[in-house]
Image 1 (tube, rainbow, N blue to C red):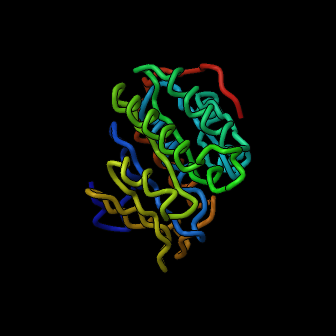
Image 2 (image 1 turned 90 degrees about the horizontal axis):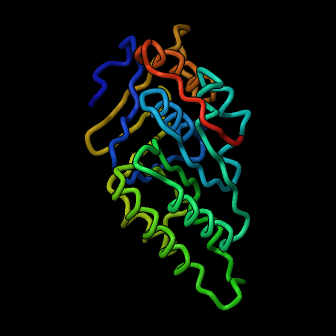
Length: 226
């Protein structure tokens, strides 16, 4: 899917299939990961598992751009503060997911594995094993997996190798633009002659996206954690 004009009435975002996606963003763009996650939940039933680091799953950010608080109840968030904790959470998600799981999210997945003080265990090897187990299970169940990396280097290289597609979100003079293998979306004016790269932009995009969701889509209210 490609966006041919910035004047189209319904903003488009990358549609997630059943692959492993590496989302690559620049530091000046805020909100693309949260927007992709919420957009996928708007269009699909099921639970999202989010293994968080570095505060990507902040409730104020998600609540700001989510078109409905019901959407947030479908996201279960767990946070790891060490490499061991993070790897254990990735394994736990692997055990808990089912074919009905909508999405798995792991931002800054390499962040906790850059500390040399790992008590004799190679943190890079710990990361490689956890990522391999997670990606294999997601492929087994046809569940999309979205990850981001803090840095692109030798530590994060195995993550890039497991990714089926890299989605780039870059800031242009007109606003954010997503670029993938078969997707490029142009930005959308807010009606005042300017385009924002802040949360207000993503709030606007998701608000417009709710108009294309089915009015008969069943409400899912499984338990969640913010």
